[in-house]
Length: 247
Image 1 (cartoon, one colour):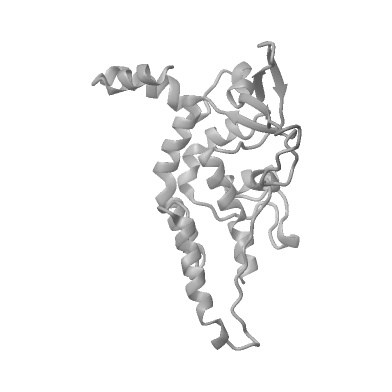
Image 2 (cartoon, helix red, strand yellow):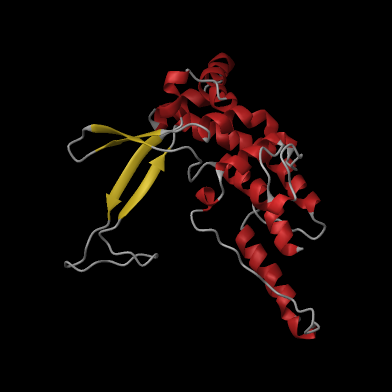
């Protein structure tokens, strides 16, 4: 749908039309309500693989140190999937924040704030400003964690176990046993259908080659970069692990 045309349609004060959009285009993603034969493609997206150019035949280095002939891969999700995920994040973000803040007394959250990364850096600088005054036997330590390919760094089973609120296998060296309850923000319960349809389905990516021939690329299950709900799912899954490191 062209941007100008879409803006015109949605700017019209037509509640009946808007309700049809919500019911037939947005809510199926929220509820995971799709015809089974279409689920693999619905969970996928348009796939792009671009080759970076060379300058005078010499490779142009990128931020990761790879040569210029390395391809850059991007996935563009459905407009309606992005819409449903965005609205779900907006609806659940406060409850998720309350959950994260309530698990540990001294936990601070900056995600979701305007310029949250800068605020986090400023707080860390303030904490470290007087680090010389701390007892050497109990020093103040700042640790920055950065997970490479974060969404794929956590197994899918514990992610779905956290969403379900119950362990399907043992975790934490046996401290968590099968059937034990797992902490979770219950506001995500209503989006179980979305997670199951989008992250629990082996998706199919679509792309066109340089001859404009459509191709299909079968993929495995899991989340996709740019999915706001996937970010929330990752955070609530690893939160107890971060709490153990803190302890």
